[in-house]
Amino acid sequence: MKRATALLFGAVLALSAAAPLRAADTTVTISQGVDADTLNPLATTITPTFNVVQHFYERLADFGAHPGEYEPRLAVSWKRINPTTEEYTLRRGVTFSNGDPFTSADVRFTVDWIKNKANASEQTPYVRDIDRVETPDPYTVRFSSKVPTAIPPGLQNPLFIVDAKYYQEKGNAYVAVHPVGTGAYVLREWKRDDQLVMDANPKWWNGRPKVDHVVFKPIPEAGSRVAALRTGATDLITNVPPQYYTQIVGGQNTKLVSTRSGRQLFMAFNTLQPGPQQNKLVRQAINYAVDVPAIVKNVLGGRGYELSSPIPPNYFGYDPSVPGYKHDLAKAKALLAKAGYPDGKGISLTVNAPIGRYNRDREVAEAVAGQLQAVGIQATVKAQEWVTYSNLVGRRGLTPLYELGWNQPSADADGVITSLFTTNAPLSCYSNPEIDRLADEARGELDPVKRKALYKRIATILNDDAAWIVLFQYEDLYATSKRLHWQPRGDEFIRAYEMSAG
Image 1 (cartoon, rainbow, N blue to C red):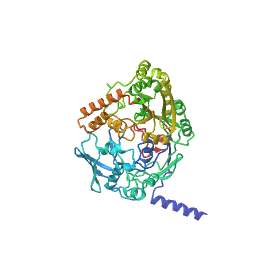
Image 2 (spheres, helix red, strand yellow):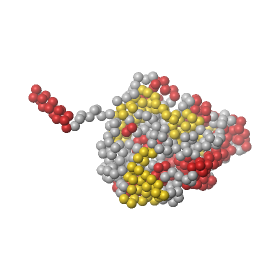
Image 3 (cartoon, rainbow, N blue to C red):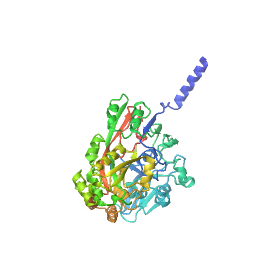
Image 4 (cartoon, rainbow, N blue to C red):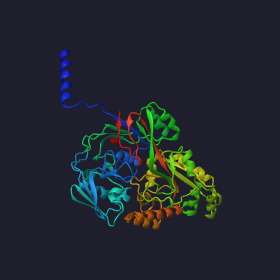
């Protein structure tokens, strides 16, 4: 027995001499309201999905801590060669998690995949200005556009770079559930709508992250998310409703963290489908009928910021002189009468909303529907789970009125206008040739003063046309276990490799 103990003790000493013992592995569980809709990072624009796939995949340059800032990732530097050409120098020695080397060919394939109409990517607006991708050598990439653009195409909406060889060999359906990237983590398992488990990538070029294992466990119902946090079943939850603040702040092992979000919540009219919403006077009347400050106060507990324009105050292109709409029932009723709907008679509409995607999403829709009743409009809320809902948004299948949120990490007006208001954008249910023309002109205008004036003109037209019900920006509210060390970001990205857990 003594000899066995001595041998064991000697073995431990030998192991300690060879390599220091690693502390116990850390696991962090994150609960968003919805699951990822795919693990193909090129197919979607959904933030909860990006929160998952950014652990497997990386961009050439990533969004920094503040709007308009960028951090080197798969590229170490970038520069303008001329007004229509942007050059990136790539990071050497990087491999995908399957061992394939990362090169400029992967960047070219990524852009071409999104541009290919057969792939039906929601990210096509991200690459619309890229005419071609040149790869003069394995570690140099040049994006060329047909006309000058104010924001370099590779920076406005940085793309997740995929393994060209792997994609071509496996096909779209396979890679949508079997991610292979250059990121900090690799997938262990994914049980849809239950949990997704990932492990630290031992081949990550940036070193081993402090959190060894990450579990994304979606919990659609807010009260259930709070209960899971309080019992230790999860470490971080999103979209905390106001009625739970006291429980979390006073909890023995929980804390509340928040930041002003870049996300705005709005109600979009589907003007491409027949119905009263195609009448501008009706849309204007509905805007006057909605009382946004009351919604922020009563539904969000005051944790929101009223907006007057689709271009928020912290975005380039915002102009405070664009008036927006203020609650005015008399004006709403007068406009309805002028449109041929006195006292709202003859208007019965559906207010579409997701369940669990945004903080109090269904409740906001119910508040809007209730306010429309005050001018005689019969409004009914139709709430659906997120995957079904987002698929309908992508097919322009929600009408006449639907709730959606949008966060543009580049904090530039173009990301809102091009993606949500131009005729051919996949997520747009609005068409106006003048907006299409002005959006193209603004994108190519290199003088910031002239460019800002163009966005003021765009916002003024959209305000008069009442293309949306502009609502508010969120104050993003998260709750975490006290053992988790993490700072929330205004772009809503949740990155486990920026965390530690004690």
